[in-house]
Length: 428
Image (cartoon, rainbow, N blue to C red; front, side, top):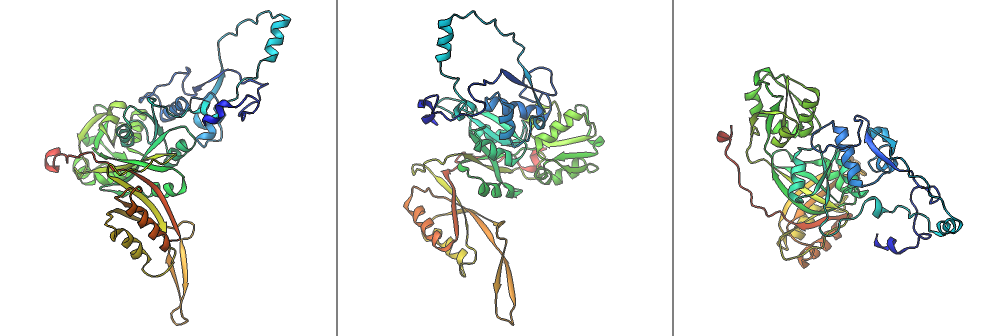
């Protein structure tokens, strides 16, 4: 990126309009609001918030660029409409012949570069961290824990989080990968393989669920409880005791459920979300700490466009994915033995169907027939840094038994001490 700064105006790569047609001054505003101001915490609707965050983070005045980056076909999808600047242009000065020739000899306006659209973070600058959900989500809290004082950028889908980092809208991403009660988030495992981002860290965040509704709502009047499917399952037994008459309904995220109730003034509906979501959207907490297990923890991974340099001065973890595609019997045992013989501890192994080649057909003798086997991808986390010779030798041996091997990242382990909260009989 820095190489672009020393190029002459004629040799620089041009983006947007030619220099002879400068872009008129424009700004952006949300279609739901008459003014161009942005309200970051809970004011306005979800589209308003996400659009404003994307505009502020990308630091661009181009509606077309913003829409393309976020995967939308037009500015209408983002609820944005352009309007011309209301500032009156200054009267043109009377130019002499010499001044007119001097202006003609001036170089054309500098074309926009990627550095202009999204400057890379420098020392001391504020990192932009993308997460899935709306303000008040647990992912936002994880982003703040992973990168204190960062600028958190909400995204409505996990795919958009990856695209935000790849397209330089965000510098980092924080995504949940597994929960102590709900298990693995399989969608993010698939996206890790589809995209080319690198895991650069991990953070573990306790999950503390609250049942919330509009002020003045009683538990007996509830007919529906909405939240993320994971949150609903994690509070199943407690909900049965608190509101047995309420129907459970799954939505995209926990904080989004709280926002939906506040926006639509639903008096008979409650949400399961964090206490911060209740504060942001003006809801009243009816019950605090309603998760069935007080030791509810979610593990998040931090993603970046470039990997970090592995070290040996602190505990590291490495994540890989591989496939063997029937290269012989006992392949999985041989792969795992490569780590066991070198005293490398495996912390997780996850299998996912191979989407490009889901079925492997094996022809046997006529009396036995044809066998069809599922093909799997295996995700493995192990406690070692790629800077260690034992980890390098283990991967070298694994490569001999696999048809596909990719390192997702080698990163520092989260060594933050965690204190288990009060027991279930003390929390209510």
